View (cartoon, one colour):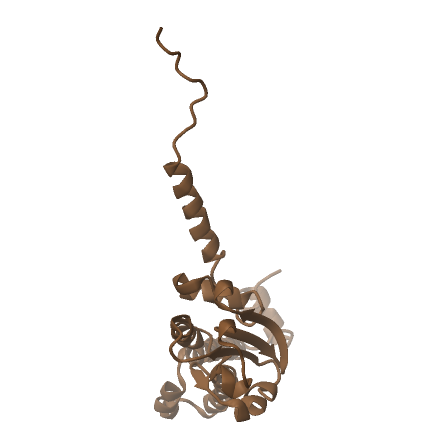
Length: 242
């Protein structure tokens, strides 16, 4: 097919007959097409810039945008605000809350839809309870969407026996999903933060990034150490000299 923009005798004849538009109109059409393409490129560039900007940067650069840009920027700002609000609503904890028995219903039973609650019953003067409280402080910061609570045992459950401490209950929407009762369950004072994280993650309350149970690694190392320390059994006794 012949190029209608080409400067040929045939095209001149077609222009005279009105079949092809004058050269000037063709050039205007081409120029308009180029301008539209440039606008599209600029719009795409502006959208990409929005995605890279914080809300503060959007406000600082507000004067540099055109009317169309400002509309797009406002839509993007609203989207970012909604995302931030959703994130803040989800990550609204981040620390361990101390409660008493009278707070139980409000803080646990009525914690809210899809809110996991970790309750640690403890008493002052029990070293393992103090260790678990320390570990829970770190886990609360690591999993701010989970509600971590501690309470002196007898303020929540009157006459709760000290032999059952430490105790951890895991709730979702007021229902108990897991419970860990007594020092043996936690492995004593050798309990690490990773081991506690793994134990709680098995209830589904937190999504750990640990690939396997840290306690298993310790057990494997212990078994290897024991095997290495046991002397090899002699398969045959040495013959005694006559």
